[in-house]
Image 1: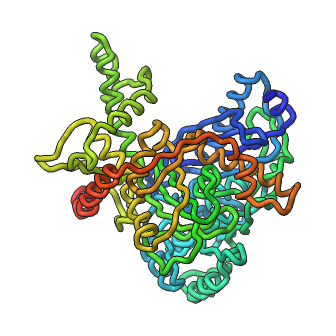
Image 2: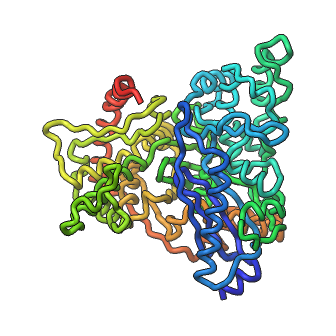
Image 3: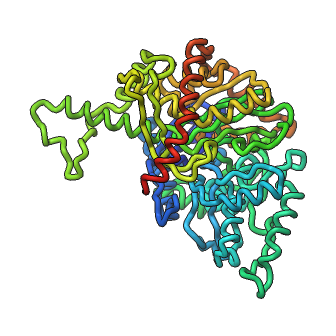
Length: 556
């Protein structure tokens, strides 16, 4: 049956550019996963800027699709020649700047960069609206404040998913969820907030004209992508786009494309959290928690981003730059030890020239699972152990740089279970501080919270710790491990549904067509876990001063 579906092109393709992995998911029109593809990559720190070169972006796109194509060929014995619809997603924010000839004017700055402090503060004050360091408008304004000449040549400023979408379709657009991380959105007009647009244009008036430091001739709307909402067509896959995507040359052009979205929006879709009072937490390389609001916040908070669902509903988001990256490094360390223990008399045979141990024969899934599950045997408060997985700056805790750190007192209860539990807790530490503002300080209601991302892959562990962190029930769906790219494929399907029935809404479509028979598990918070997590957070907040001192003393 699935073979015929693929041959007929009755499929949806979702591709998401994550921080460490690009992933493609091909689904049926019911959302059933037919095949997946992967490409692993890492950002580079070049001249103090976290970036990915364009060549790596293009190569990663092709490699990921090739992996999917090969998976389909192996599983069904056929080659993908056409798809019914597709969409592109990626990590939000950052800064990609191009001139009229599509030349990149300055290295791509990812969301991870926090070198926009002055711009973010000025914009926050001018707009009376929290503008985080990582937002595209912060990067753009900082480049202007710094007098960088390339801004004079700007023709297109955008995010990663919008850029890839442009390569495949020729359309300079952004889904409203991703656009809400570029510039503030007005949920009434489903567009950039016009008053704030005018305010920004006023702010840069001093940089216009030949007598000024810079000679800027554009206005903001000239260079930003057009905003579209879920269900609107955002062009089609061109022949050039198909050739770029599929280096085998088999993929045909012409497939409808839905608006590109950020990983926050696809996470909402993948967890069916796009209606008011629903929320989701995505935990992986970064971590973010989102709650769809049914009332306005009383004021703006520097720890909280205001973004939107793919349909434009206002969403409060607690976004932490640092998630499980440092935790993964520790797991890799234990994998090296497992490799050494498994080497019967080989000794140095597993040693590489770099001094690293060859872990190619170690089952990493088993290593993760055993360490995660064993953490459940630890003390509820991690026995006084404390860690910070800060590979980069962390806006919520007001750090522009990070230093991964592990600390304990002489009387802390040091064992493997507590060690891992502390690293799992701290992966949620910063994002919990933002959630506490929403749930405790603002009294927002959350009727359904869903977790997704690698943090939840080991059943019953990450889910339990998140329930303790927010003191609320947490649901994890069976599709949690597919995450954002699956959510992007669902948005592509919704485009086709919307074109057939203009009255269908995204929340109704998800409830009735996608999640009606979806299997998931819900876990209530354990009261003792809740108390333990709060005790851990007391130390976590106090220890931020140690982290600040580490940044000051340990120069990178």
